[in-house]
Amino acid sequence: MRHKIKGIVIRETPKGETSKLLTVVTSSLGVITVNAKGVRKLSSPYLKSAQLFAFSDMLLYEKNGFFTLSEASLIADFYPIREDIKKYSLACYLADVASSFSIPGDDSGIILRILLNSLYALENDKNSSRIIKAAFELRICAECGFLPEVSVCEICGEELDGEEITFNITEGVSYCKNCAFNNGNDLFLTRSVVKAILHITESELTKFISFKISEKDEEFLSACAERFLLSRAERGFKTLSFYKHCEELP
Ligand SMILES: [Zn+2]
Image 1 (cartoon, rainbow, N blue to C red):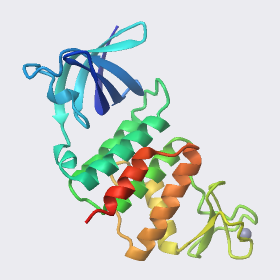
Image 2 (image 1 turned 30 degrees about the horizontal axis):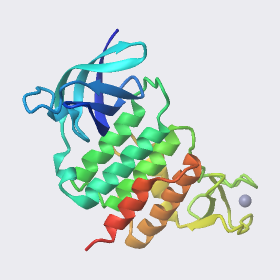
Image 3 (image 1 turned 120 degrees about the horizontal axis):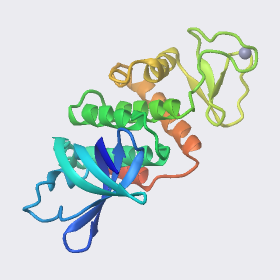
Image 4 (image 1 turned 90 degrees about the vertical axis):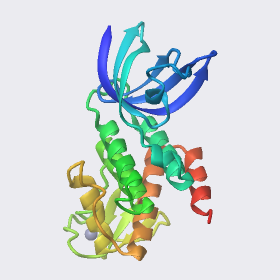
C-alpha cells in the first residue's frame, strides 16, 4: 500500500552500510518508523530529506505495518537550528515530546503542525526560546486531552476573571482566592500568565506562539508549562536535561 504524506524526521539511526531508520512525525499516520534505503550515499536523491528535522513530502510503501521510503521532496530543512546548540537542544526536546504524545495512526496531523510551527518560530526567533518551549508544552497537552482549566474555580465554580489564581499542576485545575489551599503542588499565577495560557491553548495553530509577556511572568509561565507537561507525560525526558545544560552555556 502506498501513502503520500508530509513528515518531519525526528530521529535518524544508521542501518547497514548506506541506509537509515527514520522516526517521522507525519500528517496522517501519527509517528512512524521508516526504512530509508541508500540515503547515506552522497549520490542519493533523498539525502537531504533523510536528515534530522528535515520536513518533506514523502511517498511511502507499506507492507505488513513496515514503511519504506519510495520518494521524498524536501520542503524545509530547519538547518539553522542544527547549527545553534541551544536551539538544537530545544528542538530535540520538542521532538521527543511530540513522539511521546503521538497517538498511533492519528490522521489529524495536529502533532506535526504544533511541532512545525514551534520549529519555525525557533528558527526565526519569533519569540524567546523559553516562551516557544512553554507554548509548545501547553498546546500539545491541550490538544491531547489535557486542557488546563484556568477560567473557573474548581471548588466554588466562580469565574476567575482578572484575579490571581492558584493552579493545581497535577489536576490541571484552578482555585479562586477563597478556595485556595496550598498542598505544595500549586502555583500562583498572575493575570497575564493566565491570559498567556488562554492564548496558547485557544488561539489558531498559526498564532499560539505569538504573544508578549514580562520577563518575570515568563518565568512563571515556563515553570507552569514544564511541570504540567511532565505530570501529564508521566515520564522524564533526557533531552530536557540536555536542553537545560545547553541553556546554561555562555
Ligand atoms: Zn472558589
